[in-house]
Image (cartoon, rainbow, N blue to C red):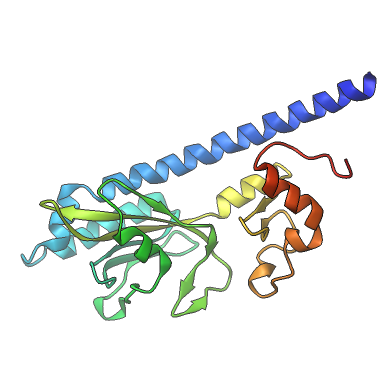
Length: 231
């Protein structure tokens, strides 16, 4: 009986810890969604699409101030319907933001987040898997764990492009680590909580599914709940 009571108390504590962590992450992600809604307001889109001199510069200046205030977005971008970056603000690890010159803007038509978002209806939002930031076809070093939020933007009912914000996920991963938890992706790759974090990108065998195949199969089968190793 005592063993069963202790086991029940352990499960309760772990459930409470995971629930608290889930709620903290949800608050963070909801704040990003609120920012996304703000950045697609009609005034921003009008400045983006306007042919009047100075309007797009005004948008760039407004976005720069927004980036400086928030400090947790590595990139804020508006992409045209063909995937070309129209406006882009970058922010570095020290919170320094800058407007990317037009001649350095890139076409992102081949990137998965653009392809996913351009086909969405008004109000729909694509949230990417947690992955690493890529520039000019290469993973940025030091590593930048990133979540991308993308949604189509409209002007007078016509889809005119895609808004993309890159959220630095370091704080989320740090919160998970502080709570002595781990995070895996949908294929069992380690995102945090192990010395194998992100190693699956170079080594397909560096996953929980390979190192702990029986437990991983059971996790996938159940979908949620808990497992007691060896039982």
